[in-house]
Structure formats: C-alpha cells, structure tokens
Image (tube, rainbow, N blue to C red; front, side, top):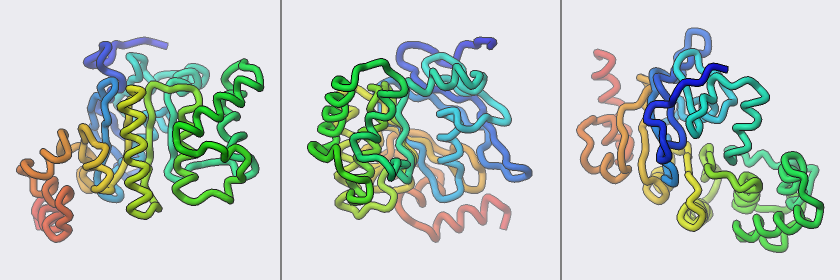
Amino acid sequence: MTSHPAPGAGALTLVSASALTRRFGAIRAVSEVSFEVRRGERFLIVGGSGCGKTTLLRHIVGLLRPAAGRIWLEGEEVSAADEDRLRQLQRKFGLLFQSGALFASLTLGQNIALLLEEYTTLPPETIALLVRIKLSMVRLDGFEEYAIAELSGGMKKRAALARAMALDPGILFFDEPSAGLDPVTARDLDELILQINRSLGTTIVAVTHELASIFTIGERAILLDTEQKGIIAEGKPTDLRDHHPDPRVHAFFNREPGALFRSQRRSSGH
C-alpha cells in the first residue's frame, strides 16, 4: 500500500478528508468534501435529511470506499487500506450506530465482552471486570445479566456506548446518537458524551440534525447542504447560528424551513 502524508498531518490532526466524493449510480451523495478533526475535540457533521451526513461517516470509518478523494486516520490512509489493515485501523475507534446494533440474543454484559474476547487475549475474569467498569461509566452498573429487550431506549443507547468504548478507543463516532429518544433522555446522553470527552480526552465525531444536541456537544461543526452535497459552512455552532451570512446556514440553525426553501429556489434559479 502506497503511503501519502495527510494534509495537515501532525499530532493535533486525528482525522482528515480531502475532496471526498461519492455517487450511487447517477445520484450524487457526497461532493468534494474536505475537513480535519483535531485530537480531543467534539466535531459534528450536521445538515438536513438527505445531505449525505451518514454516507460521509460511513466513508470515514471504512464501511464505504470513495469514488474520489482520500481519508486519513492518524496519518494513515483509510481509503487505501486493504481489508486486513482496515480491520486493524478500526480497532482504534468506537462506533455507535443509530440503531445501537446490540445483539438481542446476548445479555448486556455479553454484548460488551464480545469485542474484548475477539480482539484481546485477556483472561475471562479480567474481561468480566472491564465489562463492569464500562457499564459503570455509562451508569448501567449491575445490568450485566439483563436481556437487551429489558432495556429502555435510553439504556440501549448507553449500552451501545459502553460497547463502543470496550477497547478504550481514542475516538468515538456517533450516527444520530439521540435519534428516537425523548428530549430529557437525549439531553442525558448528550451530557454523557460531554463527560467522556472532558474526562478521558476522547475525540468525538457525531452525525446529527438535532439542534439541541448540536448546541450542547458541538465544539466545531461542518454543515452539509442537501442540494449541493458538500460543505457550505464550518465553525462553532453558535457562531454559525448567529453570524453566518449564508441564508441556508441561518435557516438550518434557526429552524426557518420557509427561509431554507426560498434560498434553495434562488440557488436553483427559480
């Protein structure tokens, strides 16, 4: 595999993408997207439905290959890695899917232990201890023997977070972490994400369209446009809300669907 230095490569850059483009047949999903994620920050990929947020995330973690452009993780090119090397790179991060993706046939404790059994040679008693520690970190102490069906929606999200943290990753990726949760439970999950970032220094990269989550956990964000399929704004969420001149950006961060529709009509020439 040919190695090329990532743009901005260095101790402070953890993830970077350059001119990332993806099409599904004739449909453009992501277009010319470039960005960098700094070590220890809380970085959000935001935008309306259909703008390519989840597609972009799936490229970053190696679940999809770009049609053009490149992606690096800690200076190594994910987009050029073969399957064996990609599997090794994926051990460096945790991924929380929107659905949680927990195995219903296993207990909560077994779900957490699965990664430790697959990727380490730790003895069973050490794995059991680590399972308890990870569940304690997400406030699920004592739930090791619970079936997944016995957990509430918020508990399932926290359980999935505990599993994503099983191998002590330096970076956590989230796909719509608060999807399907009531506002109080969603805020509780947001605060837990903040706590993990601040106490462990874990880098957070999250896809979301929920404004409450954006303003709670977002340190820096890129906004993808539904029509353009690329980045139209980057910065601190409150700055984008209050000061960005583009009406599409203002419309998104201020919940103004009429203004967003009008700006899209103007950009398409209608």
